[in-house]
Length: 114
Image (cartoon, rainbow, N blue to C red; front, top):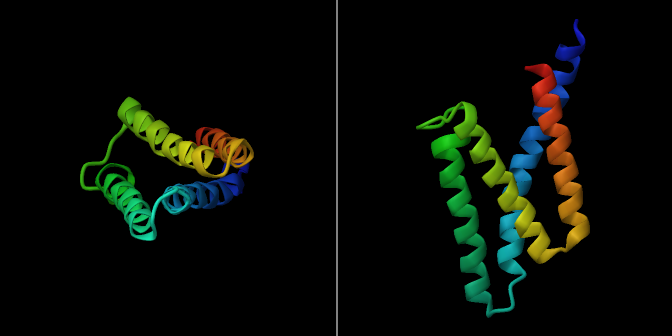
């Protein structure tokens, strides 16, 4: 068993958790807005729905129109950047910095195991 194989499983788990964290961050962002409850629910639901459709169309392993190369890198930058900005807007710097650090680690692990 090579070092790459040993790192591949935790790397995939971290990537999945980060993808799910983007949804959670967007939903949390919507619920933390200063508005009446129906608008907060609509913001949270709309943000998560937009992300689900985007990932399903372009980012998921079974995506309708999967992206590769630089287009995939741009999608991931925008995707995880959206999660990071949602955290920054709702929770502050510390949560966003931890998310960015985990994202950087995930990216490094994915490059190392490729």
